[in-house]
Image (cartoon, rainbow, N blue to C red; front, side, top):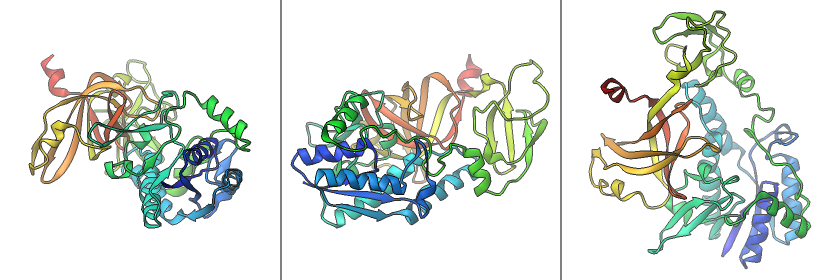
Length: 384
């Protein structure tokens, strides 16, 4: 195949490109320039997508003997990832920019351009696996190394995108083996530290970054009964489950810590309460998508304008490195709008609107949705 290898400048994407070459593919390397001021995007091991990273990617491509280009996707990245990040916080939600980047940039904008230029597939250094079922349909699965598994952040991929996705690190048992292989190949990035945190917030101070990019609007901190307990400087700086930095000034009646339970952007209020109130067992998600064929229960209602699918068993993950939780899921549709609903077998804490819930069956990724509401099942609680 003609393969376009997305090369971030890190060790994973370099080894992935090398393995694509070894597999006999006609490989071209490309580095995505995602910022107009790339010199500001790395602090030590934090951040990515800098001039330094583009040079590291170029050195790897030179070593592999493949063509190499830098493509400027900064305008698209600003609109689809950074601006979306700000808008989500302004709406009282907690977004995952890595999900948006994979969805909108690496497997939408990049793949679209790759196919237009005659490439057959895009290759990345993600730890995930594409499997072809008995009928020839593509499925997304967890990588062999669950500690490094990145199938969660790829849960936004569609069936069509999986047809053109190559993940050469899928069966690699550990990151240590990737580094050892890079060393053997003479790749200069063999010992380069992994990047982490949000790439456009390299110092990790999300709250400070938001304060620089959003207008502060002081408002009330209230309890679940609406009693004012204090004042905040800006609701966007708080997240569900947060305990520190509330500055309420007086303890709760029971003497226990308070936690952020809800952000109300319309009234600019932060609602706080006891830790027990963070427990939820029902999540409702918007904009669901399926990584391959949808579950048969969902497919059965494909012709219905409105309705609800039968429930189907899943495990659900709400954080990139979170533990999968057993649950049952179903799809509802009303007036043409779909909502993916999940009922957890055991309650979870700290789930916030804006997060992504990714559904699995075994190692297979079924699909995902953006959490719009998370709550305790009040009917079940009342019945008990």
